[in-house]
Length: 290
Image (cartoon, rainbow, N blue to C red):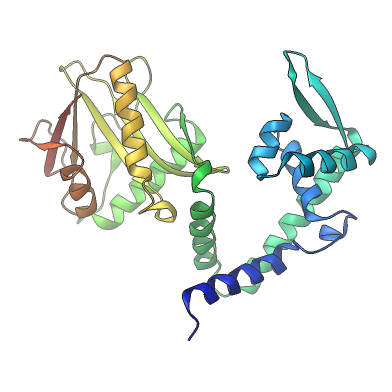
């Protein structure tokens, strides 16, 4: 049997081959993967050169060579930031935009071909999400947004779907207090979404009330990121926001069908209290003084 290191290296070889990392002409467009990735990042709106370099994890020397090559091909234009002369910005030319679109079409087709070949594409995608989340862990971003925004709605729908599968009798959000999360918007509260390179990985809401406390609601982490500390990051951030809003007491509730959530709160500085609402679903109640 293969040991752990051998399995990891087997995986690395398979991915290297699949993504064309060693090709001198990535997807047949005449340039290697590195240059194509820089073009892709710029095409997706990352115009700050330093931000592109950080996003791709490139050293400054290689980044400069790749930019020069793309400039020589007249695919990009590099200029000084008009608001900060220390920064450089890269934008696609008309020719670069066409090349970017060609890569997008070819990349989408390559992904589709792989998924069609695999007998259980959803299982494969779940494994890909897990690997991408783990490898990109240092680049997770917590963003504050309106709970009605697309990324927030994605997380909430995934959260409701999981509750529906795990609760006896299912789950209907319309029976909960504030089903539209309208109290999770400043200045009463807030809503946070964790993002990993465009994929929403988790969320949490801070619901303002007029009862002398605020509530933590809808803490959810994708299966692709569980066990990696994301829930604690979300909770720490939302608690900091609560302090900024001059909230000094938080409460939350959960259900015994979610034993991992119960343990999380029991070990996270929360104190179990008596029921404080008439929501039909929870049977555990906690509070925390800030």
